[in-house]
Amino acid sequence: MGRLEGKSAIVTGAGQGIGRGIALVLAREGARVAVVDINPDTAASTAKEIEARGGRAIAIRCDVGIRSEVDSAIAATAEAFGSIDILVNDAQRIIGEINVEDLTDDVVHQSMQSGFMGTFYFMQGCFPYMRASGGKIVNVGSAAGTDGMARWGAYAATKEAIRAITRVAAKEWGKYGINVNAICPASMTPAIEAWRKNCPDDYAASLAHFPMGRYGDPEKDIAPAVLAMVSSDFDFVTGQTVMVDGGASVLR
Ligand SMILES: NC(=O)c1ccc[n+]([C@@H]2O[C@H](COP(=O)([O-])OP(=O)(O)OC[C@H]3O[C@@H](n4cnc5c(N)ncnc54)[C@H](O)[C@@H]3O)[C@@H](O)[C@H]2O)c1
Image 1 (tube, helix red, strand yellow):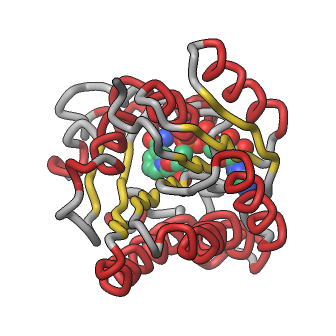
Image 2: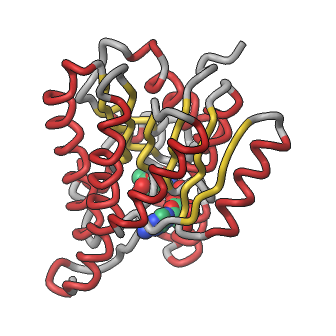
Image 3: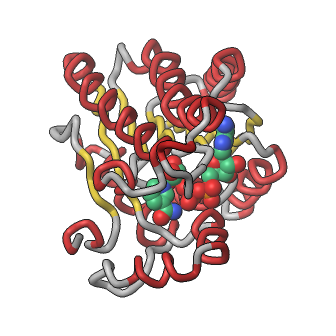
């Protein structure tokens, strides 16, 4: 029997990369998973993969930065599965390589809307479903935020805003048995592949910070940590950030 048997989960940004890995692992452990992504094709493909492996999933196209779409996604999940016990806010429009003096309103808006506002909308929308019998929320930050990575101002600020609301909600919702935590991952994904292609020197230099000499794998390295965080193993842990990064943050 899986560790999440009987639970229902929403994973945003689950069409590819880290979100996909998390969706696959939660489903493997018995959770019914709503695979949410702005890209309907990749969302459908992850959901199909889950079903092909014997799990249960629905695919939902949703721009997490639009509240009405988030509300519809939450309603569709509750309708399909009857409850919402787990929320993983992974979706993010990743925009970087811009100095602070060159950041435009549009770049900051896109980053905040897809990252912070999407996380906030889903947390608020899922709260009524978790209030009665508890729940687990995992949000996704970044070492770009904790370190203050040069040329990643909008993204770094977005990720720190996400970690801030994680701590605040943990304080407010602890009494309802809702655990709210965050991860800062480091994993090979389509986003990192694109960065490696565009900025090969930065990518090569980044590897020097990895005690294990590599980026993680979404399914094998990142998702198992999230699985622990959404299981009863984390019943007494809330408001925390877990660096799931092969120790990269230790060496910086
Ligand atoms: N890969 C890493 O090493 C790393 C490091 C630090 C933080 N992160 C964070 O981890 C998360 C996943 O990163 P990844 O590398 O897998 O990225 P990715 O770009 O490969 O995947 C992100 C997914 O989110 C979806 N998405 C983007 N905007 C959306 C929106 N508005 N609504 C719904 N879906 C949307 C994309 O379609 C995509 O499927 C992100 O929050 C990212 O900031 C990743």
